[in-house]
Length: 310
Ligand code: XMP
Image (cartoon, rainbow, N blue to C red; front, top):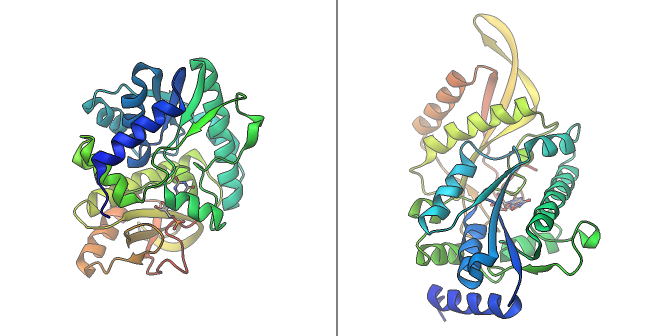
């Protein structure tokens, strides 16, 4: 039986109302299409009882918070942006192990969210977990930060966690987003991990290295905007490599480009980009980011690699 977005929305809204008939609900918006859809569903189910919030962790892309705010504004929803970057940088300082980064990120995220819940006197949390997140966390491929596993230590007791898009895969979430009237640019938004740029800076995470990656990310996104890809992003390696700048030896940063096709994130393959496109992208990165000495293209499919580097 084919998926019918209208029927899904009607059922999801009804189920949300039934599950949480009274009280305040916070919607954790990450900027992705999954949680943005949840914000709209929650608004339809709860009206003014729904409070969509976006935690600005400092690991987001350029203009991310504003982009989400505008997308939700087009469907009549006001998003609250909570600026908490210093707390995240502090929590991740000196951590280079990928799973430890995720653990600290998740812990900080939920600690801040717990404060927001308390401030709103909310008894429910709506979050955009989808089927692939659950599958990968269960399979212990990696722990997705939006799959709740923290236990009650940071939560108000009796918190109800609602995950209305949990039964869906990414393509279905996009169909629902389109049906709900979210802007097309948002419907097609490429996925971006919850821990954001922190898991794309291999090794230690500093504001300077994150800023370099943020600038590289903007360039890669601009140069690949027209490509039919699932995700296209750079990763900043911990290693440095020798290069030449201004006729002098220069030990610079190394970026890896990850540009992949995928339908559901469970498997993926590198895009066979025309050489000229790759060259243009590399030239632009090297011209605009003088601290780089090399840019590499990752050809590895998933499996055995994952899409993200960490
Ligand atoms: P991997 O790297 O496991 O990624 O092949 C599969 C998809 O999930 C995204 N991803 C995450 N999303 N929290 C998220 O919300 C995370 O911790 C996380 N890790 C990976 C990744 O970008 C890809 O779309």
